[in-house]
Length: 339
Image 1 (tube, rainbow, N blue to C red):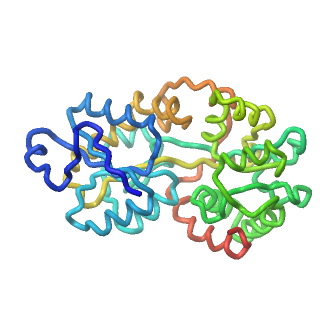
Image 2 (image 1 turned 60 degrees about the vertical axis):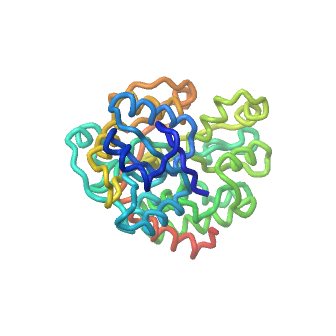
Image 3 (image 1 turned 180 degrees about the vertical axis):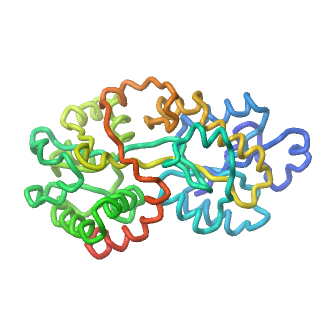
């Protein structure tokens, strides 16, 4: 369901706000990030620039379809979503326009941006295992998840989910399509159950002994680590977390990102917003608010959960190349029976 959320004014009135727009610059953001902690980002941007932010929240597919249906009259200036696969879908649909900013080019690594969209935070795809049931030496690489000794031990969400499609795209890029498909078939053969639920569900299933190992985005692990709920704390006491592939191509990372909508009526404000997302202030907020890593190397942050997970070497595969291979990854998963 799409929700209209005025961040800086009472009532969004996108279609009938011409008079207000003349009095004060505005920015219309369509966002698929559903984190309450992001509220401070919009408020701080308005405070710094004087640009009022009107926000529409919704699922990725809904927002993409809405912008397509609105056509040239769309009020959308910026589309925000998570995962390179979803950003690629929007880009292939012709929703984004190229943008140039020396500030963005200087602050965001080239591997984490494309000519039409960019990443402003990253998250890693980690392996978590039950310390009482699985030898940690068995699960040091993504490839290990296909080893027959883990038969009946793997819990994972759907193969059609963008998080797993992006991982599959990385496997194709590094190991080739044939080996990636062999790997996917091995993972399917090791399923403890049919894929269901989200990453948190997989972590809880591992802790409960329903399976021995799972793959999860790192911020779900950090959420459980920071939780004050006894049940969540008990889950984390039973789990150990691995940074996969430290001896080869590095741990797979994915992103939250944004692009300027092709028909943006407030393009100048949209560029300023993307530049704000690359500021040290906003970058630190992503780490503290949603347990994600900044993309700007100089940005300082304080997050005990992330820090306790330790340093790791991440995959440096360009995010645009990763995004472009997700369709191929879906075909590999389909052939392997990873539903």
